[in-house]
Image (cartoon, rainbow, N blue to C red; front, side, top):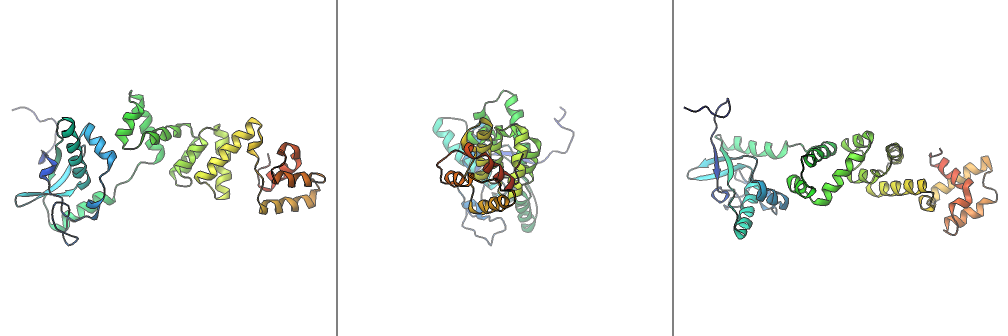
Length: 289
């Protein structure tokens, strides 16, 4: 007798045509009163999952139970639905049909319902930094970004954005993972030197504006200031102007620059012409270097 592949207990696993599996509420007329009914059977199929299945098949075992002669899906409804769609497309292309790995599970109605709930509700997504690390490792194996998009089930543009995570300072990555700043907002800081990333992050968090729009503006202004262009200096709002005027009452810095400051707010002159005013604005914003 040949030795089995692994030192463990064999389970009842089978490869089944997804059309032979019954999804309650989709293939039947049952509603919420049935213990295996799930409203998500009415959602559109996940296109990224369909494409992944067409390439690699169904990788995660579907749990089923026997009900007479029928085989009902307990957990894995979306995998079965996507496998059916993948097979429909493969058939048109003349490709081999996908079979779904299934495992029979015995138990009561309430037990099976609990399994279905647990599988859907206790999943935890990778943090953005872990996901980016996985992407780096996958690409390092010689895979293309297009192949990575299929493997991760996302768009090619998303893969490119994830790749930018490797250019972020660890402090910024930590802020992303903790939810203090959206990953899509952090991407905007990736083009800045790491010291500047940290500085801009602190400003954004202190102002409570670590949004995509705010980080886009911060990154744009930081690059503009570094290049010496006027674009990095934006006219202040009324609240900031009020703070500047209070500071000026103490220091009398503005003097004859006040009129030029008003002209700057109107966009008529360059901030380089009013260095004293721009210094006061930075001080009022807590940005004085």
